[in-house]
Length: 302
Image 1 (cartoon, rainbow, N blue to C red):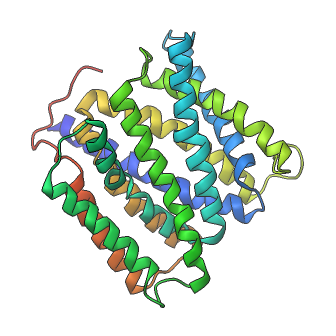
Image 2: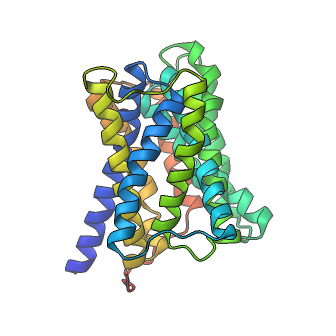
Image 3: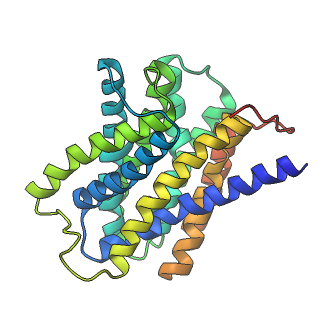
């Protein structure tokens, strides 16, 4: 019973931490920072933490060609492209709305998984996918759904991140991670993401000089987001090892819910009834698309 309570507690902490990264990202872009500069420093800070964890575990990263390719794919579809899309969306959209749209990851992943042969077709999960579409339409179509109607044109940008995260999960399920463990993979991907986004930040005039100005809310928000990102990823790997992936994936509900709550508390955001209705429908769709956890958690060896 204590083990079960501990695992549920870890799930809640993970959801709260992951949900906090969106409002922190919003604070960073409100400070004038833009996509490639933010992606670069998030990759650098997260990579430094993950690299230290790999060394402490006695598993330094030595990449062969297949492993380098796996890290490159994850860097692109799991960090650089969705990160750039999310930070761009956060410039124009409420943080809570971006968190709500991120709940579409499992719904977008399902049709891709069926096409790749990773999963079998199921009508209940197709229903969940349809509900996800209805939720998005409730945000896009009604005139009073958003604080400013002009925000509608940025909704497709916010949908890019969940699409790439869905592709990332399916890539790993279909082609694996070339013998790396998850922390090694994330460390390698973070290093490559920094190498990609750094030059792009310089070329676009978006590079963030860490000594360029006194540290304020935006700077600490960026650092906090990167540290949380590394911490929750590492903890998620631990949770999968202890309780299994079916239990751990339920964190998606909490990430979305906490993302909305944090945005309301830290940023003072408020949402229309249309957005709340979309939120409820998306959560129902998420419940249908994701596999159900077992009633009795059977921890595995970490």
